[in-house]
Length: 192
Image (cartoon, rainbow, N blue to C red; front, side):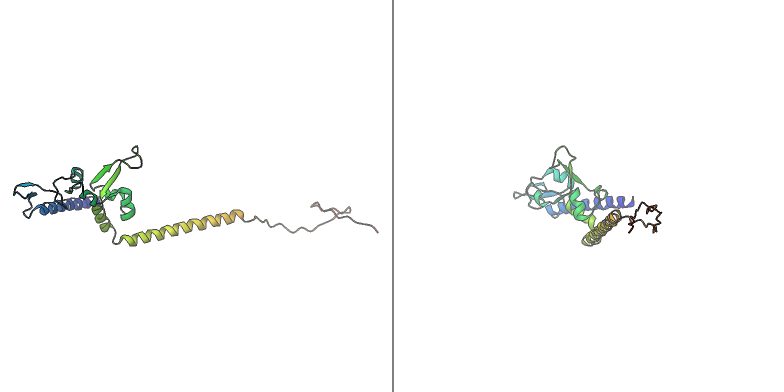
């Protein structure tokens, strides 16, 4: 529960800090206005190129002032991609701003959730000291589990294939006068 609150607080701070940076990028006073060549002030433009055409969707969700050209440079990552690349869980991403997009595989499926890769990376760095070490540890654990499972299957297979040899008691044949034993063995006698 505390982790969620801390995450919310840090995410709120990071969003505020990114807004502060974007207002300072416009002019030195931080008023959120930029001056055109003629000296008239207008709303702040794109963070990267200064274009006045801002992508409303990116600005509304992530608070980044980017034009449609610079939007391609702003990296987004899907929920599945974030889990694979940065080892974050669904609950880690819950408090991050997300953009819903139609699923490219099928429009009948759930919409794809896209997150800011910068924010996902920050969460991952807080969660894991080294992502590469954690990935190698997980791969090693996976190999161990697989080898245990294979060894178990092999031992079960050996047990099922192994011939079931019953130790029978040694039988000494006792023949009657006609040459028959109680086990069914018959011996023929020739008289000379």
